[in-house]
Length: 530
Image (cartoon, rainbow, N blue to C red; front, side, top):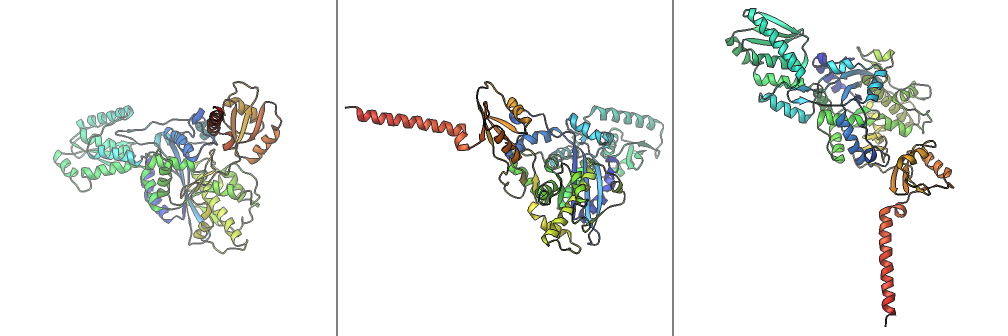
């Protein structure tokens, strides 16, 4: 089911009920871009500590925006092993109202990627649901409630001018009680049009109907009466404007309040954008970011982290994306394929029962939820020594997933995952290798990278003028390079040892050696003098 600005407010009550009834919520987000074109020291690297990775990625999150969010709200029917999935696509577009006018970038590769999978950019750009974070909400609330606001966009100004001219021409011929409809105006922009018209024309009244904004010609006395009616007081009406301008942020706040387990696949970027776009601008402190996310969503489950941890142990074939994980778990390779929970699609969401829609946010969110249930059932069966577990509850599934809760996969960093409920775990990456150069003056990091790329992929970092560090995420690659370059005439490769190879330690030892030498020399010269 696709939800855009025109029908979002009507859908909110149903969404609220679904979230409150849910056992968990699957999530997937599509962006206008993923990575800034960082280079040099700012480039994401396997050498990065989580805090360094966060600060670099934070720049990308501030640069790009969300174009689609997929939610798959899943819950048991009558507490049996039958789950119903309500999957919704929300097309989003940043709020442009009053003082709010966001800037964001497109990354060509991301646009090309989404085009390849049929993404509807019209729904995103023309009919996206507005949203804002708490800081933006404070600004716009202050400007609305104090009446100190104005139309910023030149496009909006032109549209408003056309509307005012049209209503003014109609007023010249209309009689009191006559009315006209302005079609095609919906969402919070309809409130903006009404606010401008009411301020500009003292002898009209406006109402929002299904077909558009209705304008009535009224006397000034009747206008005064309408303005002071209980449901039309200025303060109440302006609160409605604010609520409509918040758009998807209202649903985000519902989700936070419900405190349901949030499930994603490789969901780190999703969490960064949720924080930035709907909560608050990302803090500079990595620890503060972790704390904020944990307060918002106390139970996070990253299916990428879960499946990566157990995949080899189960002897499943290697996979590279969410769809392949889902296919393996639905195949005969999964010993619990026929005994696991049944997952059905709710009405208006049946399209995914017949059609695969990879990289459509709601479909991927549905896959996240399905993978979670199937993996949890597999783990539960193993705990019970493969004996059948009659009608397992979701709380039992959550119990076997406890070791993976709040552990979110991290791509290209010094640690493989982030722990949102405590300190991060130490790195389990392969050891760092050091390359010492002989007879290759002026060699660069790029040249070292090219030297090894045909054998395997390494991140390269210069240590000294003639020494470079190599780091990979595969132990076999590290072993292969050590073996291949054992007797190389130009490149000497060995395991990096901090106390032996660190320039700082080397410098300290050299200074200590010099001081000791001079001290001994002075001692012996002093003894030799008469």
